[in-house]
Length: 358
Image (cartoon, rainbow, N blue to C red):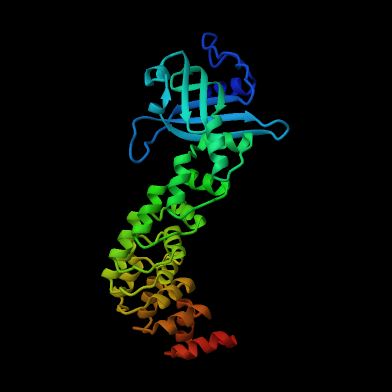
């Protein structure tokens, strides 16, 4: 951890030392007209992309944007794409490195040093004029910042053309960036289209990716009978943890016709399969989703039901249980009333609480 702090501090200060006197970062190269320069840091990522493409490197780039502060990006990149860089160089005690990253928008050239898996140095980005010309032909006028972002995010001409073929024509650059950042690529779009979600708005595609509404999730929900869920329904289910496993458990407990709204409400209020099982053991084996949610909202717990049973109130209707909780008819209150008045009906107990009697 100390080595990492020293590394980042050295870069931020423009120093040439990384973490030892022998680990030297070369001076920033002179930028040719049209080129962009900045600083980079990198380390081996602890996860692999899917599909796996070998070791991944978390590559972070920082560049100054005149008087507008710094621009920073951090993305996982396959080590195989960093031409001239090897895993041995990254893990060495101290290793000077020089490598490149080819993008459709241009080439990144990196120079610097690695020490025990952590690296830093300077980079130069050289745009490709033919890319700028081609994108202009597709309707995009690129300034330096946009061109640089397209290279960093790997928004290529092929990416734009594939989206166009899928019906996503003339998207603005921010939409292209958002799709790329979140992995809503043409392959993903084709998969969800095959499942019935054709030409979803870009915002929905991005939301699917952010919240994990994957093609596999959609397929599992369809297999469980949910074939007409909207995009909003799928996202809501994912946000609230209404997973296929949750649906299967509820179905096994007799709750087989739940709507997406019901599933979400059950999850929000903690009406879990275990809660349903406990109620069934107490004789409540036909409680619907709306009543389950109401019981959870108002604190009608299995323990509350058991205490009432011990006081002589067995198989109390759900509506009455909820009413008792709403009006504060607690087991303690019931005991006090029984001690002074004997057996009292539930309606009378609720009325006493409403009117402040005891």
